[in-house]
Length: 128
Image (cartoon, rainbow, N blue to C red; front, side, top):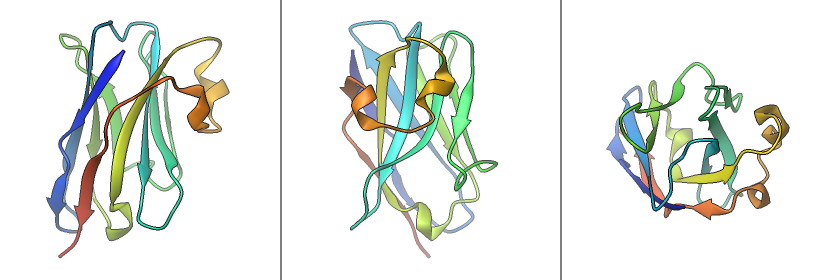
């Protein structure tokens, strides 16, 4: 699966952005799609994940209630809707996917090695 992430940009604190993760070559059915981010000088961290087949979602504590991950039913694309953005959300955002084996809850550890396809990053900058 090849992934293409897009939608990043510059936004003021409190604003919103929608990131897209488009998959090509294969369908995302039965896959887990996750969003990670990496801020300058920090390690990459898990943000959210979506189990395509059953709709189960998980969010990091830092974004729960502000971010929403979902899939367009007509497109092979997963979106990350980001609201009430804060300066600490500034990072390069990546999407990643893996064919789901087991329960989505098994991926709560946000381990990068569990994902076998990654998109290029898209920069999100939250600043006034």
